[in-house]
Image (tube, rainbow, N blue to C red; front, side, top):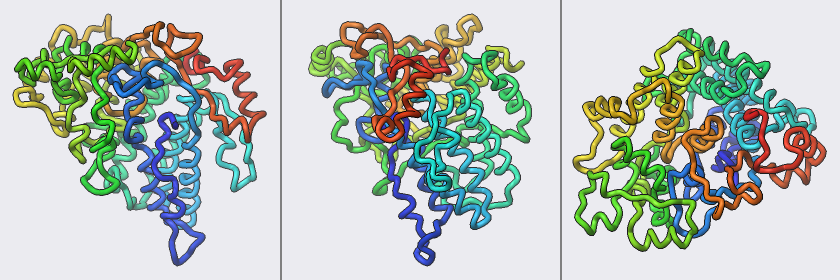
Length: 491
């Protein structure tokens, strides 16, 4: 299983071959294929991050992630990166520099994904197999990888800013270069905020880089509305339907009680877009637009206790739209709501002179507007402008500097339901918010039952083919390849 390493088809070298020149590849088709790897896996894996984040309880059987059992993950991102390198090679041949700019973005994205999962990973020598015969690349430190990711994003913005080229084959932004620039610089803000715990303890000038982006919108445009979201749209066409549409596991995902409580405590109407009333509530005639109609389960309970709650119809399943609507809602990979919350946190940390509350409110509003536009609720439970205005003043929601970080991360967490892949887990790992419940009696994090794993172990294939380098990286970071080993980012 790949961790955020999105396993769509990796056969783009074959799909993109020009039949008239069998050794040449069309850059735009490679670009289309690489773009599709930004989305999450479908089926049960679609819920893995929600299980870790205590948003969803899975009732079928014991699921490792529900009980905090991590193991090895895969390096499938490197397969995608090979297609990125091929895209660069062919773009240089056809003199289409726009795809070189996009390649820098994708390199940043997939290397960031790798280092977030494992720690140190091959970066500088990673793609030199075909060109230089380097088939056993050294592992770069995580600090080096992050510096490289930020440099890739700087190059992406620079190339896209200066290109006269035209994008074709864009399944995300309909060939709009400016929107790719906005995504590039918004992603840079996410990367820099990911490094928040290393401020003052790294050669990367985090605050200065962050300030440079937000203070110069002409050079560094960022997302300005939900219309700029980096997101995958779905259609009722074979191969393009929502990842959980008509899935055989549709009866198993229910809301975790901790997530449900977070929504109920704030009278948050996004609940009505996320879940359906319990069977018990329906039997008792409680209307679907009442918060009393919803119930959750404790995902840390023994599986037989969770299944009994399901039998008793006391838990809310995810909203029917997630498995009956082939288009449903777009899958947000990186969005405007998140960007506003990043700016709110930056203001709170003193990285900028902006008003944290303004950006916090903007982020909430953007999330609400997303569901108003793309979601499906129940009669009498819809999100409206007047509701949003009232929500921002609700006691548990109204911004307070003293609790600002918890409020910001909690709102990012609420907005992340069935979106943004592993973001909620990584944000908890970085900040401790929101607090995820741990039950040592059921935890499968052997030897560390009172904590949540903070990484995945390297794939076994690496020990088989690149033993010396992977063992050096493990020794340098952790002593042994352990899911509880603390990577540089978190020290």
